[in-house]
Length: 138
Image (tube, rainbow, N blue to C red):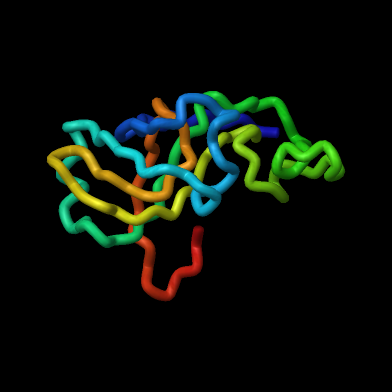
């Protein structure tokens, strides 16, 4: 296998009441709280065009993920058989990228309040993308 390395520079960080992995719901729609996205001042201009009420796709880096796992019990349920991580939404995977469909509740300078977000406090933000009207991404 040819190894090519890339560098991802976070554009911000998540501030949430969720302080640990065990406290976080598996998916946002399973009781995740509102959270704040703090965007780095060097890229804050990129928020132009985003407004309260918009749905966005938040791309994160699961910084506490186990990157050496290739099989997991889905939803941490040991009654389910081990399954390859690429067939699950587990945060534990070789490249722990998170996808979160959230609604913007408000914007205050370089901070966006969003809901619902199951990512924990301190999670790095990799990118933000709009949800396209015809898209079913989540």
